[in-house]
Image 1 (cartoon, rainbow, N blue to C red):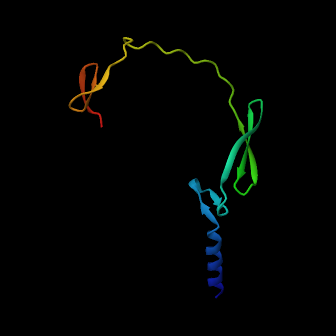
Image 2 (image 1 turned 90 degrees about the vertical axis):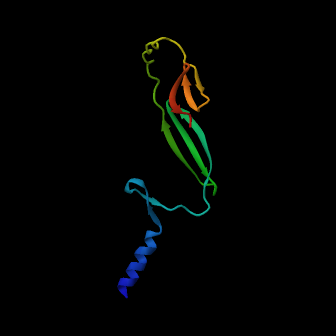
Image 3 (image 1 turned 30 degrees about the vertical axis):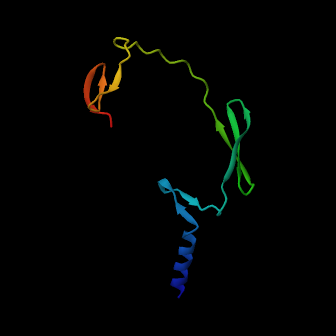
Length: 107
């Protein structure tokens, strides 16, 4: 009898928690509570603070730290001949690139 009570207790507890990805534990939310809005509340330097308002009117905040502007990357080299290809679909349904049938169906 004691064993059955313990099994029932464990089964009841397991319905409150669900396994998430990567073996993380998540607690099941209250029924009917969703996110109403997510708003940028304030910014200071490269840190933004957002406020989440739930449909039950409770709120929570979180911070997002933005990266700094980096230096401009190196310009790539020009293309082989600098010509933009013409691409069409032929009567047979294949891609036609610069007037040549590629043999590849467009679907």
